Image 1 (tube, rainbow, N blue to C red):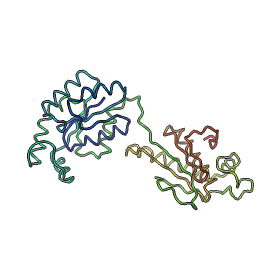
Image 2 (tube, one colour):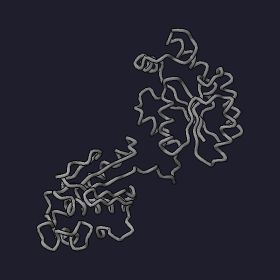
Image 3 (cartoon, rainbow, N blue to C red):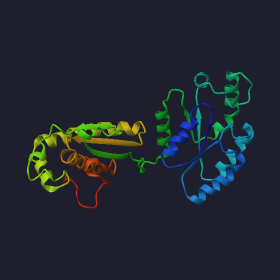
Length: 295
């Protein structure tokens, strides 16, 4: 379990939100007198948990230090302390026009300095000290991940959805990337293929006979190989990729399934497939053996 503490305005909420996205049960600004019961409840749940305690928690800095010290000694806890330079904290409070929670009257600079001084005993107990002065929210969250993950653990994957669609029916509203398949050979003009879809063996065989289809697939794979690590770095939680063609039945369907297979083979995600014009939604890999062929 993780205990988050530090200076007001340094980014404790950012860290807590990142942990929540990673599956932690998170509590902010917990009253100190509830910490012991909260800890016991989390142990009973056997769930990863994080709690933020600071000068807002209803006691003075000395009482906060004593409560944190007692927990760190008796429980399986680690303490992360978040701080930032005085000038940075002053700028953040001035920009957001929020009052500093430390009781130091109307002088912001004095409040920042007094809180820093009072929190020094807590800082000395920390397992990790992070200075957020020159970090973006994403970089701050990434530093917590580096501390939290063991080498053998893998980070949570992006939730991926792949949509096939017809341009005649409009673009999917929430797509992050859209690839146009209309330049590829069209099975619709083959009399025996028109009524089939990109999930059927005859259509798959037809499209595989064209080098430009394979090249288009490889180009998209190369782009995803480049973009995926960057999306993880930016802590993107959801990614929707769309492939479109004229009718949304053949080329876009075929390519959606090929990309889902490739994404799975790369260990990136098990995608949700939505063939919009076919009215089909399922989790990859499918149970009906429609796999778009082998890579």
